[in-house]
Structures are given as structure tokens and as C-alpha cells.
Length: 111
Image (cartoon, rainbow, N blue to C red):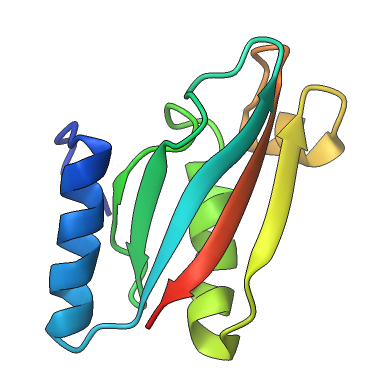
């Protein structure tokens, strides 16, 4: 899990690379599109390892759990995913995105 440190996106990517170089399976989640009131801007990153440890943020905490779960699947099968969360989406309410906006997050394995 995250240690609560607010790392810059550059630091998150560097950390992800160090995890990968150390032999961990790693995925990067990136905010690729936002609409309305979105908690994090386009280009925000979340690094996730194969044990579920993560650093960074794609949503200010409201959908990270769902993104981490998807990322673990991406690490396992190597297939990138584009996932969307929005206030009208049942999943978004379940994971806590109630800010009124929508976000698209691209999740890919770091090779």
C-alpha cells in the first residue's frame, strides 16, 4: 500500500522503474482523459507492483483500489486496459468517485 508520501509524477515513474529493475512485476496507470470536475489532471500516474503496493495517484484516492485491482490483472496477463469512472457509473459510486466528473485511466505493464 502507499506510505502516504505525495510523490511527483516523475518520482512515481522513477520508482516504478526501480521496482521493475529489482525484479517486481509493475504496471503504470495514467489519467488520459477527464471531464467535468476530476480529482487529478491528465498525465497523473499511479505505479503498482505485483503485490498490490502502489505509489502516486490517479484520483485523489477515490478509485485507486479499483485501479490497483485492474493493474494486478494487467501485470499477470500483459494486456493493457482503458478503464473509465464517472458519477453516473455504478462502479464509480461503489469505489467513491462522487466528485461529479469522469476520468479515463490507461493501465499498462512496464516491461
